[in-house]
Image (cartoon, rainbow, N blue to C red):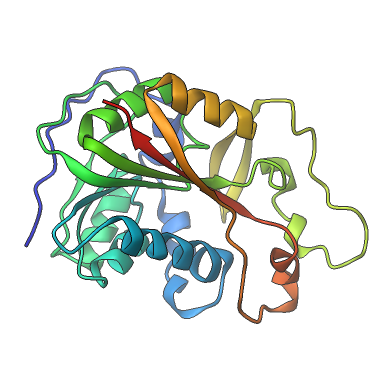
Amino acid sequence: MKLKLPHLSLGRKKTLSAVYWQKHCQGYIDLLKDTEHYPSPYTKVMTPALLSLVNKYTTPKSRLIDIGSGEGYFTRQVTALNRHICGLDLSPEMVNEARRKDPTIDYQVKDIEVPAKSTVKYDLAFSNLVFHYIENIDIALTNVHEMLKKDGYFVVTVPHPCYYLQENFNWFQDETDTPYNIGDYFSERTTIRNIANTFKTHHIHRTIGSYLRIFIKNKFKMVDIVEPKSEYSVPITLKKIRKIPLFIIFVIQKIS
């Protein structure tokens, strides 16, 4: 069964995410070509934690949507659990790649930071490593609130604010006994860097407290916070992901 996505009208103002992610993503797509064949924090730490939440909060009859689905890796993993899920991304290149890898999944090019109305309601929405790119976060959460059924769930994952800052991207490759370099946690800011070959993007750092206040402001309540830990044998360059959380997962619920 192929679900149909809601109609979301795009506005004229280009968002900060669109500046970096709407086109020229080939470098990032190339980076993900072997995602399913090598151990990484994304595939071996984050994805199993998220799939456990799929099993906890949904059934095969549930409607799911992946907001910021990229080239579709996570969407395909959810489909393998016999769940019906749609994908939404603002990058035409990403959506085309996702459709190429699995044409049975419904993907559309939409910007979640643009105000829109949803005609389809979902039981569960995911936003996997996307909200640290979102500048207009109130608009995005209003759109998600509109997409969800009454008491629907929203699962948001971001790089852990305490241990990951964009300028300290390579912290987990340091195998010395020196203290972790966590930067200035309380300074909320936007940084720019190359993340894959010549692909450049931004990172909006917010504290955990800021995320919680933003969720509450936009009519969501906290259900759970997950800091997934690696349970597998890791190569030396990823050893420290067993010592501190690389990601944080917020499970929030719509308040009608």
